[in-house]
Image 1: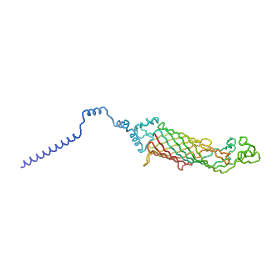
Image 2 (image 1 turned 135 degrees about the horizontal axis):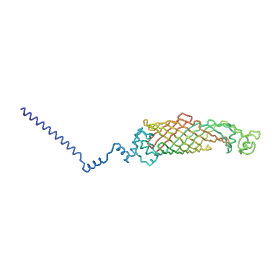
Image 3 (image 1 turned 180 degrees about the vertical axis):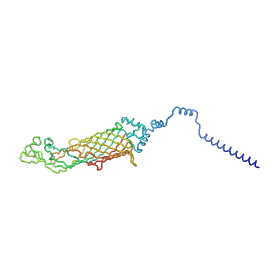
Image 4 (image 1 turned 90 degrees about the vertical axis):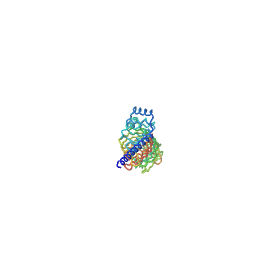
Length: 392
């Protein structure tokens, strides 16, 4: 009986073993049926290509960046996104020493050496820009010289004679200027620009005039006509005797507000550079304003320097900076006294030429940016500037 049980157990185990082997064979056959074999030509071509072209990972990455024209723009934007601050669209110095792909823009002929800079890993702003700039400021001026224009004529003899008999005080000028600015990066670190605009504002001051003009002096300089009191009458001034006497100009505390407007033309240059998230720049520009109350064009030279940080804070993406500015302004304004026969000519310059700055730029996209800059209450000159720029 035991032999029969042993034989039955052997048969059952054999049957289970054959069944398992059959299931494995069916599974393998199904997998082979799902994967269609390649034809011989495809296999030969694949083997030939693999043996002819062997690319390293670096070469594959370069090919993905440079060889695919359809992906050029996306690849460049992705590279921009991966620079020193991931959300920033403008960089100043390489941190990742990997070449940036070409952008295939018509404007890429500038800056000079720009291609080499990008291949070295530098991220450059687009070369050309056009901006609308609004600037409002209020500042005190210092009077350097005062002269007279009598009946439309000036005399150096009279202007030397009057000396301190005319005083201008509490002179303050406020203005608002709108400029259209064009710029270009000539080198990766050097920008040049020109601007054209309109300005309007007012000059507020007080005049004290206590002047005695000898009639003989007026006659010698050819101002007015007649003798003695008649010469004073000819230029609408009171006479003080005895003969030959004087023509009197005596007025105190003339509160004067002069409204002005005019056109502005100028040009300038900027040098910029930096490393990582930090940058520095120096700017100088020269402008001339042809305003209606000035005898000559107002000349202005502005020097400024800025040190800042490039990155993101929350939703903000752009730059923050502090800096300083020096405005060298010279102008001559004309103030008419009662009767309009005598005009006071005032040469003036800024009394607080240096002020401090704090500013920010918001990079909306690689093309569009907004800039705001002010000095708060850090100097006698109060100013605020806004700029909307487009780069291409």
